[in-house]
Length: 428
Image 1 (cartoon, rainbow, N blue to C red):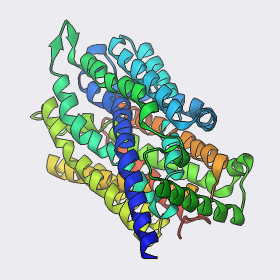
Image 2: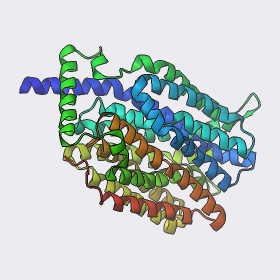
Image 3: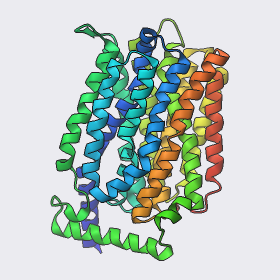
Image 4: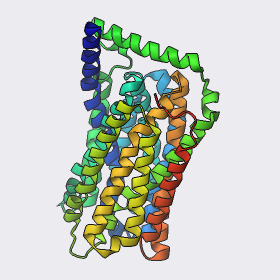
């Protein structure tokens, strides 16, 4: 038993260290090119004459493009293999993200954000599916957490860097234009490197020793067989499964809150005081995203140790809702109180994601898992359109962000309540 345990620990550790840093780097770049428009808005909106409503619509249109190609993209991935499909995604979204530097009208902004969503579609569910083919159920929440921790790390690093880029003026191009160009380059480079940096399946992993590869394949096969004994899902059964549809709706509310907050956070922080410069915005935003980093680690680790998935996700959404309501009603009292509520909101929201994504993979198998994960992500990411659009529209209509923030809080509460209705909770 001791020898087996040693082999298990060695194999799991080697797999994590081999694939997680690279996947985390990919998601770092993906999220950077998805949300850097929030930092650009501090200058771009004024330069191009965009209102908050125009900006909110354009920022959210990314997720409409994402929705259109999400499920087809993930199904293609199962045919061509994850590494080549991820490479294609990285290269095309890098090129399109860089093209954002050359928009001049609202129509240009809308088109380029839509195309960026089309290009990046299926990246996230592809990674989730990929992780489920390398990590056992007991390790999956930690794996998802380590991967998703790239998001708060990205924001901690990108906040001061992006706002610094806003202040430069090279070759007659405004700083916000250079921000899009500079931050698009890593995606293209990493796309070229991906096919040689990842292995599609454990059996292809020449970097594992023979006994390690054999142990991992056996362990994963046993888990797959156990799931098949309970129920073998076809793709159509997965698409129409009650809990899969509920998860789609929960993820919709999660993303309403996440992207409604994230894509407007630089603007809201800037509006707290006339004394806050663009560069100071970048430094202030490091605080909530550092809290988000801690939340992902703690929630993922705690969820794996206890085997509890739904409860951890509910706690995260509850904290996020409390923070958003608190910000709406008390945030104007002082910048310190507002930042405190923003920090609690990001902590709760980010902490909810790792346990959430272990739920569908706990009962779905093979192609049904790939398709259903893509569908959950696709429908759920429509929240990434609704959240920012609602924030921009309500800001113009009501004259403050309080109404929009409250709407996001209601969505998080609804998501938490829907979690209580799941029959297959992912609990071990």
